Amino acid sequence: MATKIPTDEKFERQDFDLFEALTALDKKDYAYYDRLSDEQQKKFVPYMLTHWMSAIKGKGDVQGFYVMSVDAAVNKHLFNEMVQKHPKLQWQMLCAASPGLGKQFHQWIPHLSNKVAQLKEVPKQKDITEYFNKIYPKNDPEDIKELSSEFVKTQKKKVYLANKFPELKIDDIEILSTLITDADIEKYEKDHGHT
Image (cartoon, rainbow, N blue to C red; front, side, top):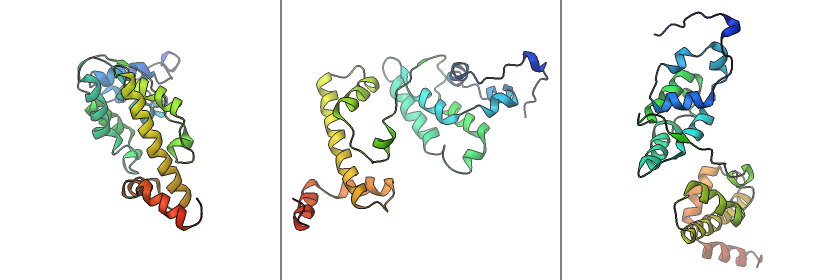
């Protein structure tokens, strides 16, 4: 186990440097977390790093690798109640997701609004198109428009189901939305005199 080198408190950096951490992740520096001060470790936010790490500007398959690797090595386990108790393990999971190719340019891609993510409102076409343009900057604008349109249509169905069945969890709504067709919804509404 790595030991911390004592330092004079007034010279020790207290802030957690996000970009320094991203560089350490790009280099697969598993020992970086151990070199942080106690104060810096308290400011380590793995979720934020996951979001930054998964989005890079790059050529070829590097972008796709980062997204898939972060999802496989980190996203699936990050919110597990046992994993959340071990920030060093979370750091190591992030390191495992990195291909170790050296420093990359990481970019911030904004999230969808909380109301959209929680299925409380249908997203606006314009917002989704802007969001997908940031995620897929090299894609054809017509493809982005079609993707955005399909996303809004799918989310509209999920919001409808979330309103009809408020006791269901979002994961259950996701599954239900794949089983129920638009025709099923129309028939339900007609049968219940809502059309």
